[in-house]
Image (tube, rainbow, N blue to C red; front, side):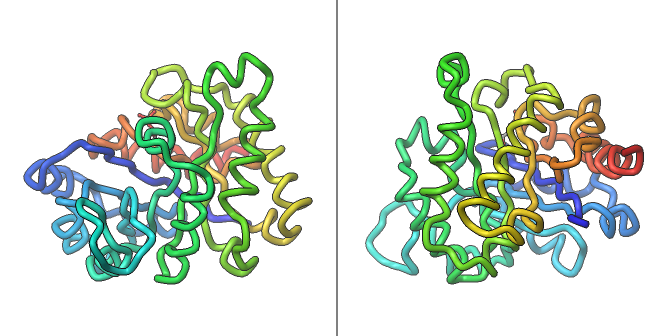
Amino acid sequence: MRKPIIIANWKMYKTVEEGRKFIAEFPLDKELFSEVEVAICPTFTALQTVGEVFRNTDVKLGAQNLYPVDEGAFTGEISPVMLKELGCSYVILGHSERRHILNETDSFINRKVKCAFKHELLPILCIGETLEERQKGKTEEVCIHQIIEGLEDIDTKDLARMVLAYEPVWAIGSGINASADEAEETIALIRDVIGENLDKEVAEKMRIQYGGSVKPGNIKEFMKKENIDGALVGGASLKADSFYEIIKGARGGKEEE
Ligand code: PGA
């Protein structure tokens, strides 16, 4: 059985002060978090504050990016060593905003995935098609390409521990989520592709999330699906109460399966 995982992606929202306010309002529900894994990926400036409060709790800390080198002359970038020092367990890689706004390629993302593992940071690798690609019937092709290139030459032991997030680009921040059936169909296909091209056991063990306009009102529908193991949540993770409701919904959805 794969343990459900809900991850907050705060993107470029929240000052340190706003992060503190979130923490003060967020219930540390030990029982719930033993059933649903929870991670929060704040801005770099809020990582330390959020990390200190959640240290020794069940809430994990994640970063939103890394540069795939330990240290050096890379102005404006952040090293995996620095993220580890702050207590990060996870790192979001290949988010569509970085692919499309910052032109990150699959091979560059693959370097980041390898570097994350080298430093014991678990990647949350994001993949997904744009609206144009979907309309042209290219969803499968795009996702398969991003998986195969992004995960090239990664040890199967490592692959089984990481998280994959299927996030159709048209559903991110738009308020228009993919239907649970659409998400399940693509995620089931992703699992098959992993089984056929990488490793059968990895395909069974790897947790695959859905992301894109997830909210308290729709999480249960996604979680009822066999292949969906959780969600990567942007907008609805910015308020402590709605993020907490999503985590509760993730447990509820699996119970009703
Ligand atoms: P959203 O963002 O929940 O605001 O759609 C999801 C994401 O970008 O990871």
